[in-house]
Length: 112
Length: 114
Image (cartoon, rainbow over all chains, first blue to last red; front, side):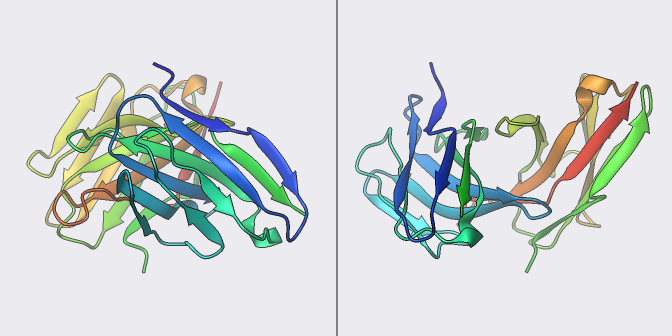
């Protein structure tokens, strides 16, 4: 099993550009989440999904969109990037009956 | 409102020392308390977890102590090693209505000097 995979590993954008961060898991997990990690702020939940076709907002959703058309994939879209979105982004997944949340390796995004 | 408060923000110990990281929570519905370990450039990974029906859990050199009445829990690392240098996050989850969400503390950067 590859676990949780994320692409790209690094990305530099200009203000106003759009992009999609990809996340996939091969563990057939129902729950998937996106977090951003900033120095001194810990891990903050952006959006989450409890199953295909079901998504909801987390703690810091503004400026981000998500969709969940399959169990495996949970992309995060930035429609118009802003410097405040410079961060490290982590995708995570967990089975509905499990406890452990598995994290991907992260995407480091810089918005100039 | 920060539901899980973690301290200290950073910690430096010598090899063999016993670093202690503390967390406090407010939501009495929380009933699962994991600790995650994160090395530079990597995603967090589950280290150890506890439920409130026990006061202590040990896995190797890592121990969680849990005080339900005080709504506090802590991570102790026995005989710490330079390889333990990492960022540690405590977290909490409500297995009821918000079963899908983990609430994280802000993290503690641990440095173990040789």
